Image 1 (cartoon, one colour):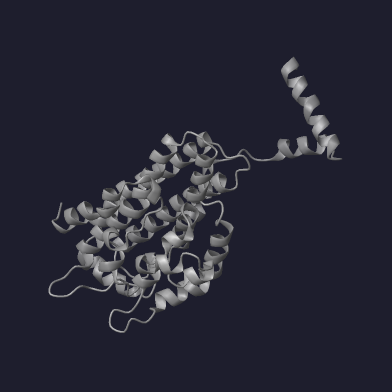
Image 2 (image 1 turned 90 degrees about the vertical axis):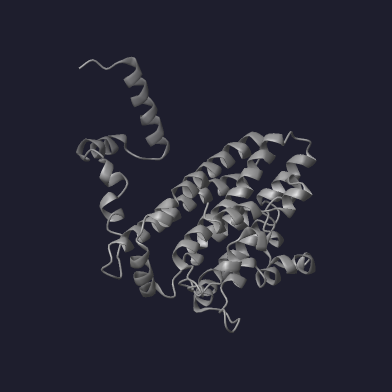
Length: 317
């Protein structure tokens, strides 16, 4: 067999690499010789992945519910992968920031457009039965989603609307006590924390507070301000941030709202969500006025935040 100059060059470079590590290249070549070829199913751990669905009831549509939420969490992991690249970049440029934001927005595009699987993909009667076996677990308890929010903006922008001005100079720990989503997980009759919220805080409170501190000077909103102060052209970046703001704070909550209206709306009273969450006030953006990047929106846009979408949902559009 003829060894080409290209192969000879690569062998030489491999030899240099392993010598620099004090290793014997021949042993590594033996490893390659005896190793099996990689397969698709082994590479992505397909058998393990397909074994991770464990329905709690005999209703067939529960498996749809489980798989969709697992897919959602994998998308959130993709988003967080991009968030970390942005905030940890040592010499962040507008171009790098925009490229990663486009990826993030594409992930959320896929999520919001796939939510018809939840809205129309299950029988209502099955859902209302199997959901009772899930108590007190709730999609509200997605820690990854809360981390995305913390990477996205100043922590104060996640505080409940009526407390923001009062707590603007407060510590992350103090602000965390009034983070908006806690008010969506209170018992409707007593105003006390639900078990869902207590479980969630026990597992993630320290993680969220520590991440909030880490991102205090490097979240997306702060990084935008730094780039503008450095006189960078942020026109394209602001466009992607507006898109991201709408994706996370309008589109994503409202596809959940649409699903809740379909499955949990029952006259003359509403059905509680599995976590006991007050979803009627927690999900609609017009109530929360949660905006990551106030500086990129004009006052009229902020005033009308989320209203038309909610009206369309309520009118069945």
